[in-house]
Image (cartoon, rainbow, N blue to C red):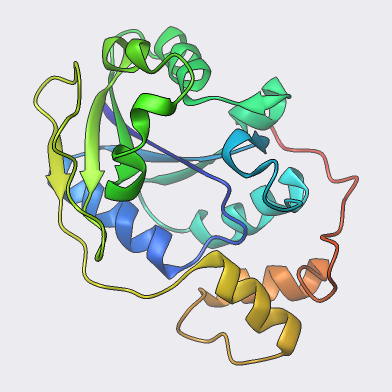
Length: 206
């Protein structure tokens, strides 16, 4: 089986994430795409407070539970602490020894991969699918990765930062967020106030 590993903060999950995953799935002929919700994303620790991981996971699950081939993963949340891709790939490799893993990253992230934790181990654990993002150059160096796959993505000027501000300011969200995400955001009261809420919701296994 060919399994895509699409990690992210998903704060919140939006149309751009879904389109990126779909194009990666098509380009690499993936059987499954795992949306791995970060527990503590190390890149964003100093930038801002991140919404409780269980709530972010709940929104992801609400959106993709009916999309064939897409699955939400709480692996990093259950592991706790900072979320490093290398640890996630190691764990998935142990769980799926006979399957092929494909790390899905945007071209912006791909250009920064040399700064990631234990970046030299990543090509030993997974192949890579780079989703080209408008405005970011395609990576010229993907050290160690065997036969990298490049997925084209239409230009979508959508960001989680803008969407959080739209929720706070009560501006339109339709067509930028899936209806299930809007419903979950309203149900949990996310992004309406400055500090992101925390929850006692416990992640379900899986």
